[in-house]
Amino acid sequence: MQIQVAVAKIGKYASSQSGDTLEMTERPNGGFSVVLADGQRSGRAAKTISNLVTSKAIALISEGVRDGAVARATHDYLYAVRGGKVSATLNIASVDMVTKTLVLSRNSHCPTVIQFADGTQRLLDDPAPPIGVHRAVKPQIAELPIQIGMAAVVYTDGIQGAGGHGGDAFDAPALIAALYDRYCDAPSIAMPLADDLLAAAIEADAGRPQDDASVLVITVSPHEVADGVRRLVATFPIPPLLRP
Amino acid sequence: MQIQVAVAKIGKYASSQSGDTLEMTERPNGGFSVVLADGQRSGRAAKTISNLVTSKAIALISEGVRDGAVARATHDYLYAVRGGKVSATLNIASVDMVTKTLVLSRNSHCPTVIQFADGTQRLLDDPAPPIGVHRAVKPQIAELPIQIGMAAVVYTDGIQGAGGHGGDAFDAPALIAALYDRYCDAPSIAMPLADDLLAAAIEADAGRPQDDASVLVITVSPHEVADGVRRLVATFPIPPLLRP
Image 1 (cartoon, rainbow over the protein chains, first blue to last red):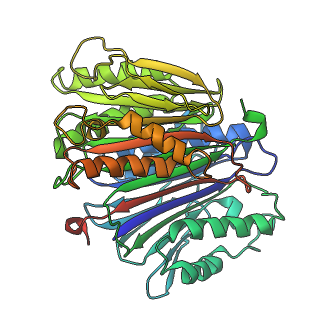
Image 2: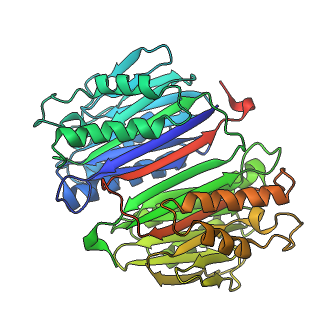
């Protein structure tokens, strides 16, 4: 049995950097958390905001603070330091090995999609305002027992709005269900699912992403890791302008 | 051109958790940093210390603090909160996209190994005391221009001491040179290098790691990422005792 985490991210076309930030950290009592923030607008300004948000959230998580309090505190912090003038979406996805649950916290108009081994899908799409602009914002939180075969998919606006302008031309949940069916028995499921969802969104935007787009997938796979080794691999393309 | 980061980690045999902690974060001005700490002893006590150390270092890095100051501040913090009674090794490896350098900060008796495209190896092995127990400890820092083909390998005690008790029976730098030769032209180099180094260390310990062992590899590959997508994939084996 293993947990797989995969992330695929791309910046808006012709933008110097993505305004989405994703950070992963270990939980002090066991397990790990992934924090994904999408800062208002794109480019440098958005990146500064999403960095501010994720680093505050990560610091609180590493102190053992529970996710609901982390989301509230991160909102309060952004509201305080930016005077309520700047918004960001915030998702926290935690694998908590104490409670043996997957905890999904959302402050985003994008739903979180859960697939289960029996083929059913659950959409976490209750209204959940972004953080930073309204007073006393709360996250929408779902806590689900860890079960073999489950897959949670979190994504940002660039996926939600692909192929249109803020519309719902791109049906991410339906595509996720199809991709889950395709990969659910494979030894590696999280990365191909994230890759294919992002690739489909980029294609819907005719190869030029209209917004920063990020996909996070967490799956619980029955496959054993024979050697018991934890692994992490990341690839960062270096755009021509930034090369030494 | 791309940067590849790979991590392979295993806990001491029959120990409930690894006392090594590894965290990765984006640098606010571009690039990313990886922090690896090995807490004194093993199991729960070591994990608490290494978590404390990495989370302090990550928080400082995310505020834009330079690596040398991060290592000093993290030492001072551990020294203050644990009264100089607990030690940890601390490595910070940063890809800094502002200076276009790889910055390697060490407070560890384990060397950092750098391979270059021309086949040469540089060993960063100046004496660098662990943090937490002596006063005013400083890190050993090397700053190297990012060059295609370079590979930096950072590891902890479980690799250094594999196959013996604190001795140097296991020649990690020689093995790294051989593995670099084998993989340097492959599209994927960081993960196989990390995997093979850890596997060799486990084999030297007859399949039962005598200490927590972690390997971090950062490589600069000439291969292009055709779709420009950033990717991250992590696998966490769940030991039988922790399963739901």
